[in-house]
Length: 519
Image 1 (cartoon, rainbow, N blue to C red):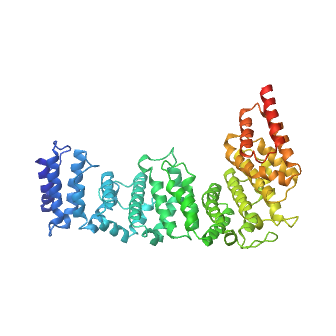
Image 2: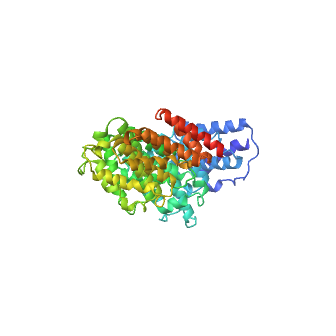
Image 3: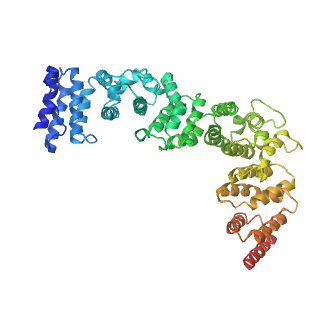
């Protein structure tokens, strides 16, 4: 019964005289489950004692932690369930003790505090923390040296980072239990944002430099900031900053962020909010201090899913503004995009990922809102010319090396050919280039472009079917010895067999025959 005496008697001895405390052995003798149940039952009595003083909080916690450490039962300790009932009677004293920097920096104390805060009966503790968000400000200021407990050494940089990590963990626990709390704390959100966008934080959590105990910190911080953005649609700059989580090689996954941006945001944001998102993007697009990678991610994960959702629902007129293909309108998204984002002179200077995202957005506009770009009754149009000028370098080998980027330009041109009357030489050039495109990494976008272009070729060219047959047969004979090229053409034939005429079928059979004869 050594364990029972230690749990039951030590707190009372501590309250009587600290000098009467007996030395604690580093390892307790083995005890049976029955003894542990008795200890847990004794602890469970404390919250039932009406006159139990608050001074018992610290001694009881210390005894329990020493016992858990000696018995190596921290994870499955039977003492915590009854202990939290007593601690919730004195939430202010409990929080004050755990939030001291000396205890918060202690791994065992901090782990116990987190387990208590996650408990369903710990609402009193969470409410005390939520009522005073200012206590987190100094913890999140990793550059400032905070006052440590007496007899503790001067804080080092790792200890301050531990305080920051524990503060973020505590905030995330409160947010999980009360989603409306952080949106009402703009000052705290500002401190969290400062931590997130700091280069030191991003660099520290790269895979090769990451401190193992802190591997989950980016996920918890992104979760908190995302919660703030969900309740503040106007915080669009913060939303774009959150995209850093999709550009940095963090060990923790941020699937919740990507799912929200691509699945929930398009459904939850109104058309007006989506318009505001676009104009905010145009603003940061011309901000040289904003990273190019984030601009690309903003288009890829925010604007493209949001606009595609609205355009597929037939909201083009409300979303894009009044159609004015011949003039410029500051309320027209298509005009602003073509004039301020499409910059043919900067085509080669753009990051490949940003150029791909811009081309994807261009294809989306041409597909769903072609009447905003060009009127087929007019022979000339500056918007269409600017759009084609931006995509045209993708047809040139010298100016476009990345195959994914190259064939996204083809995709834009394929949409333009399908929607507008384009010179037949351009149509044939784009088709032949796509017919030769068998690169594995660009296969999805190539097939998408061919699915749009192939049915349009007969309508845009005289003798279109004959030209389709001629170039398909020619490539099969000349390039059919390359298996990827042969498979690419055969896939095209299977997918678009109805577009071909009987003459094409005979030509293809002849091409196949010649291919296998000469290989």
